[in-house]
Length: 144
Image (cartoon, rainbow, N blue to C red; front, side, top):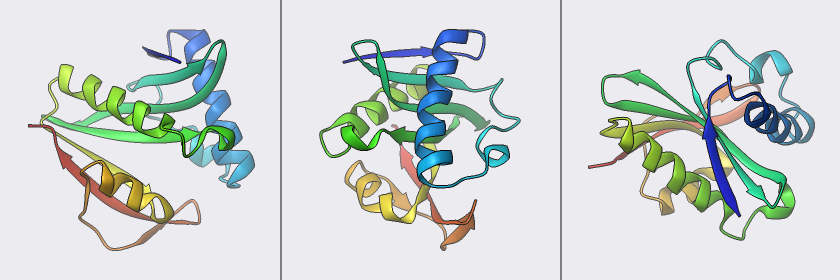
């Protein structure tokens, strides 16, 4: 498996990221497309993990404050869950955040994924809230 990182200007990579996001969020979880594709697409770095030529996982990173990266849209195709793909994506996106100067990263995790992020060193800093009809919590991790 290999990981590619780019921006919306990297059309093929960005289209592959959107493809995985559509399959996971829009089709599988019934998130409305207008909630999934938002105004932050242009300012974000997009990451895609490939199994050969096939895009199987995606995520994005943007900065919300000086030294604070926000990890968003982490998704893995169902047949690739539970075999380390999510960990690979998170390691790559955290490394990208570090190289861009992040001291910490935040994310809004779906509550069913909270145990996964806790294993990676994230801690919950919010109460449960609804986003696109799905319960979430905000989590944070220091990169120092």
